[in-house]
Structure formats: C-alpha cells, structure tokens
Length: 292
Image (cartoon, rainbow, N blue to C red; front, side, top):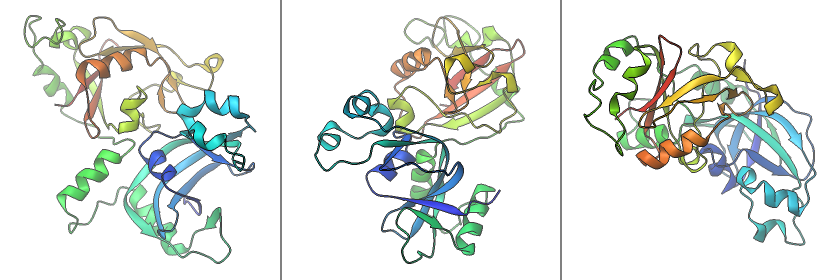
C-alpha cells in the first residue's frame, strides 16, 4: 500500500513522536483520515517517518490534558495559556522513522495535510520495502538512525544455537541473585525477534512489537481496551524470578501488562539503541533478553 498523504508537524513534537515519547498529536479540530500517513518535519521539506492514525478523541479540557500528558507531552505551561487551542488528540500507532528522510514538493496552500508528489511516494515506499541506506552514509549516521527506529525485526535461523550458548548453571553470571539460565528453564527457542529500543520505550516501560511478525499467534493481539484483550501468554524476562501473563495491545503494539517490563529495565539499565531478543520456546513461553 502506497502512502500518499502526509502531516506537517513542528519541533519538538515531531522528534518526540519519532522516538516513541508522544503517541497523541494534539490538534485544534477533528479529522476524518484513518490509516497510514507520512510525517513531515515542518520547514525541512523532508518526510522523516510514517505512522498510522487510529482515531481522534476529545475535545479535552485542562484536567483531561493533565491526566494524559504522558501521551501528548504538552506541559501545563502550554495548555493553560489563554491562546491554547489544541484540544483534540489524533491517536497514533505503528510509528516508524525512515532510515533516510525523503524530500517532497510542497504545494502552495498546504498547511496541515499534504498530498505527496509521486517521487516522494516512491521514495517512501522503497524504504518501507527495506531498501538499505546507501553505502555513502557514515557509520555514525546509520547507528543514530538505528537507535531512533521504533522497531527493527530480524528473524534468525540459528536462534536455537544461540540459546544453547546461554549459561546452564544457576550459580553462574547471576543478576541480583537471579540466574542467567532462567531462559533455559523455559525450553530451547524455536523462533526469534529482535527489537531496537528507543528512549521513549525505556521511559515508558514498553517496546514496540511489529504487527507483521509470525512469532505470535493472531489470538494474542488484543484491542485498545481491556475488555478487548487477546489471549494471555507467558512472558519470561531475563533476570526476573517469575513470568507474567499478558496479551499485546494491538492499537499500540506493546504489552498490556507493563509491570515486568518496568522492573526488567530497572534491573538492566538499557540505553537507546540496545537490542531486545524475544524468543519463543518450545513450551510456549516468550523469553525476553538483551542482545549484549
């Protein structure tokens, strides 16, 4: 599916969206658009990412904005001003920065939505299809882009071999008294998924799970609310003593139960760009470890 429409967003909001901190884009009115669209950094002439617009909520009052600041990142110093007018939340999901920004032709009069030119449409499509960054880009730039990526998927054919290399003795390489061999207790891995963390993931105790992966059965994907929850499956986080049950919130592509993620991050102190490995064991557990 080609993305033909783009939304212009100013700083600092566009950067907060791209790094996963901001999932509500606040606007002064409703929009009928739903589905995929491109993200334009205001004044740059460049498309810098893509996202999915799942819905619009509001209008909110000041109390409502105060309760949801973790979603829109607008501080009270802004939304309490007399001239503040952005009371509607455009709810975003599947946010993905592009490895390289794509120039577009800005049409006269376009202020909010932009109809993209064919060259920009094709440039975005190529990157979404996995065209690699050109060889001329520096390693530093590629590393920065990787760290900002919302998610990065890599299926591995030798996942079983890597799992065999995990320590097998409970007394070895413990973290806070808990064994590194915890994953081995859940059985050998048969499939694997890799995800690069953003600072927004770390700050908000979650990680984005690609919707197209075959690692999880369709029944695990739930809806936006708890009453639309999917099948609960067991998650074992490396270093934590007990596994937890959770489905995946399909509207945000994160675990609905984030308590273990928060403890996991607190224990291992990850940084943006660190890579998670999610491995499905033969007995159905989903083991989560850092790829270090």
